[in-house]
Amino acid sequence: MAALSMVKGHGTENDFLLVADPAGEVSVDAATVAHWCDRQRGLGADGFIVAAPARLAGYPTDAEWFMDYRNADGSPAEMCGNGIRVLVAFLRHRGFLALADGDAVDIATRGGDRRVWVTGDQYTVDMGDFSLPGGTEAALRGFDVAVGLPGLAQRPGLRVAMPNPHTVVALDSLEALDSLVLEGAHYDPEPAEGTNLEVVVPLGENDEGRGVVRMRVLERGVGETRSCGTGCCAAAVAVREWAGAGAPDEWDVQVPGGTLRVRVDGQRVLLTGPAVLVAEVTPLDAPEAP
Image 1 (tube, helix red, strand yellow):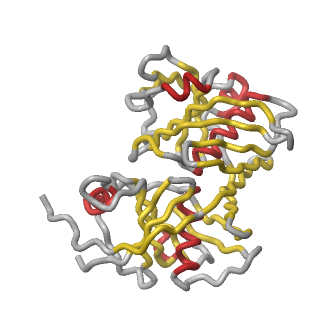
Image 2 (cartoon, one colour):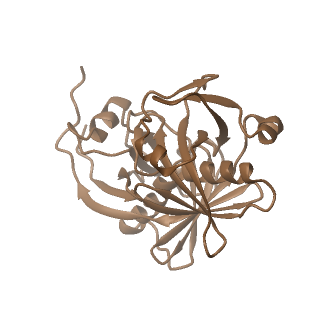
């Protein structure tokens, strides 16, 4: 494979390798993605993004660009809330998008089209509608799965689709959250397609009336990461469901890599946060086949 010119970027320290493919010619297998994302043998990243022509999205769309997103293990994912912000910043950097302050662009993803607005150094993503796979019963009970975590008894969890699958579990103290081991979590019932796990501590409301949540996340196909955009949305949705009538619509979700703003408008969710480009990188070669 010819060497690819990439950019390394991150959104609240959730980091990615990005490649522009305007002609739709880049073909990267899972093993190569996993090699490049490996932090010891490769370049290191939580995910790999190819900016490809939207005709490759697999559904009719008026968008120009498709976010072909892969987890660090090379598996495809529906959406990435941090990744799509970094993708738009990358396309602006490479000269493929000319967006002024306040402008918006539609990006095709495996989870459907997503609109992204630029406001200063912040990017707001229309994440689409959330859903609760457990339906009305799960909403009324507040949970629909039991989650086992190392060192803790089983905890109730609420599944949220963003459209990526998420499971949200609450703890009662920041000390418990900080000391928790996330690797080795198990579920009853087991999710057929895997799940991201968000463990949260609700912190009430701030002086501006926004809800505040502290969160750690175990990402499907990656492991624990410093942030997860769709996970922050799922966390805000779950805590808002648990809080009931009168709960805030806007939430500050604190993750190890920073803070993201989430707004829940009925079923629709908006995510706001930064996008940082770090470096241009070119791997010397792809891994050899085993």
